[in-house]
Length: 331
Image 1 (cartoon, rainbow, N blue to C red):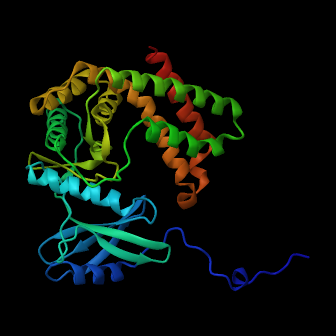
Image 2 (cartoon, rainbow, N blue to C red):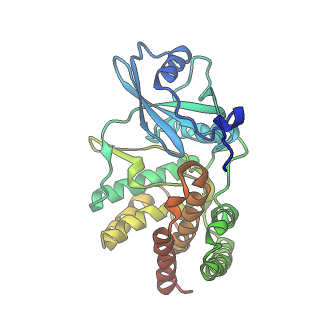
């Protein structure tokens, strides 16, 4: 006969990710920030970080609440300092609004542990469609402006470097436990990772541009309003190879089957700063690196979002993408 367990025998269950009360966050923001009459707060979405929308009489704001354990305080400070640096250089970014005490983020004590929150103005406009060469060139110019303005950024230490150790090795380590039942695929990915590691290091040794990167310069993080483009969500930023930041633009062009979109993006980038042919040639290499990173990120998210997202269909899709990439980009 099975033993009866009531409320875990009185033990308190550990919380890994709590959904914080919008009302409580509204009160916290009202106390910490000089915002006239914030009247409402609503949860917009849950994810790696949780996003809330605050409404005040004259404008609306986005409150990002970082998940406990996702980013250290030093990493958050780096991101918000980079945004402030770019904004001071005139780059159209969504920089954090400072609290009354001058801090760029707000400590939140949650059931799972300390978290931090940052407040931003809600951007007008809509995500960039990236469907024509003019828009693609505009996006390229903005990324070039970001990189040019960030070249002299000396941020707080502690931010994860977007190198092969992080993008490939750590990602593969997170993924391996979910491939125990697929030993052949695990062996294939181990071999592929070794080849990617060697090729990236060889390309870097020949002089790839390195510096602060956005980390996810895709259409969903670009807002177009009255002809002006603004970039936001630097959650994946960090020191890295600039070719890695070019990758989303190449994907957008490939999905639309338009080499012209990619060329327009590169022209826009070169309107803002130089870009070597070696960096452009390395962009396809980072496509496979990005796939490894994406699988590792999804693996690390299992305790928070479940293992169903790592099912056979997903693994088959990613593995097919790797093999297709190898056929197209053999050295």
